[in-house]
Image 1 (cartoon, rainbow, N blue to C red):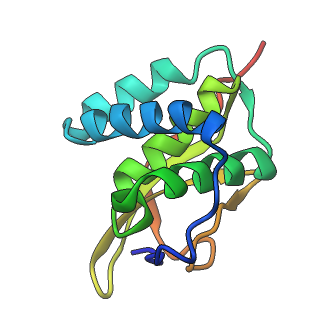
Image 2: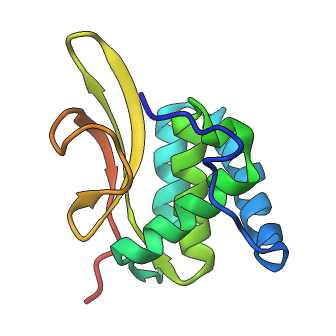
Length: 140
């Protein structure tokens, strides 16, 4: 569950930043079609070598994804969250990526977090019970 954006509400993204965001969205749509275990494996590998994303970096990536993709600006939480995480990774950082459920009413959702907080989510932390979490890669 997420907020849908109208064309006027979607963030603006300069043309020079669009190719990276569009690439992340295309990859995210391919990854989102995979089974959950495969998504986990792919994103776990993708995060390697990245530093933890700040909330500002994660929000910028999420905004960029929403700016270039109508499906990600709508109810496409899975590709939106994957694309935002991949765009963060392309910039050398990784947010915490999560998917989870809410029991009553039953809904599933995927989102990103940074600095311990969900990024631009309409529900408070803890509303969804995480079932997959891929935090930034631990550094020795």
